[in-house]
Length: 418
Image (cartoon, rainbow, N blue to C red; front, top):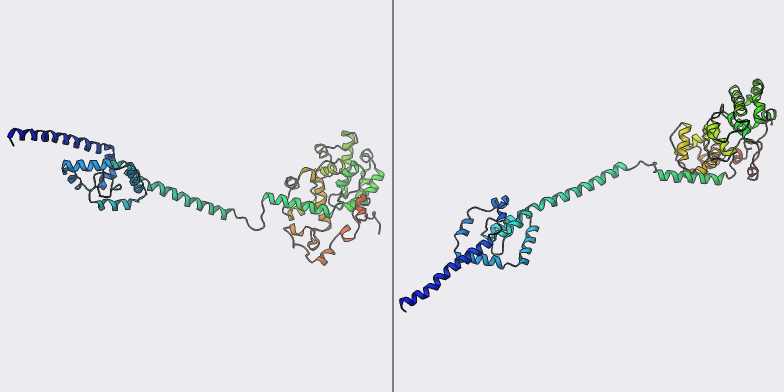
């Protein structure tokens, strides 16, 4: 072969060499484009400094080969690697890096099967290391929440015997329904024919029994039938009539005073409003509600000694002030039930649930009563404690309603009768 022919053959080879170098340079540049990943400080520190030098001294052909293999990696494979890298813990990633033998300055978490990695993996390596902390933060609140839920359960636990507001309302209303069946003929146990007689009898019932008042008022009303008559009465004569009721001097002053007020301020008529009734001498809220409920048909709660005792025994309220008891109990029932409720409770207190020795063994609402056992629980002994019609004894009224008589009740004897 001539020298010129050899030169001709060498010329393409020389021309191809720069072309290959240019291609290698372009491919290397393409592989090294994701430079921002160098800012990941943890990835740089994790890679050994000595291993980067051999990678730089590699022949251009080898560099081209590496770049080509990096280019040929399919997106699916990259995604698969990224997924496996995300699932791997930091400890597992550290183990995979040395196993390959060679790594670039990029993250050690995305090693290929041959142990070689490209700089493009550094972008995905940064969030991989940050992923575990959020997972730990999510687990901790879950445990804390469980602990928070467990603590209130012990704190909120109520002692035995306590009940919710709803349970109290239901129990209270059930007691009233039971008493309504036991005392369907319950009524005010003061004898009266008009509002004036009722307001006077109610004032006289303080610190005494309704029976004693009923035995006393016939003589009083026979002599002083109207407010005008009683307003002009001689106090000494009135005191003599009222002596059996006790505290007769104070009561005489009250009935004469309220009679004068009715005559002067209300034309001799009993007012039908609470605010007017409480202005009368000797008339408080209890007396006013008795008059409003039984003479005018307007609902009211009568908080007498029996009512106070029983609602506390039944734990409807712990209040001791009559006005507060009235408000607390009134909140448990519809307003339309207030008057009959008062009758039911007072009747039960007089006949069965006595102050000193309750007849628990004969009580129809014993299963609903928190105070069951304070009195006699033996049924036979408890029956002997019953009073009035339940015990076969006369009631407190001399002139009771016909419904009471039809139910087997007997009228009380007049004053002085054997």
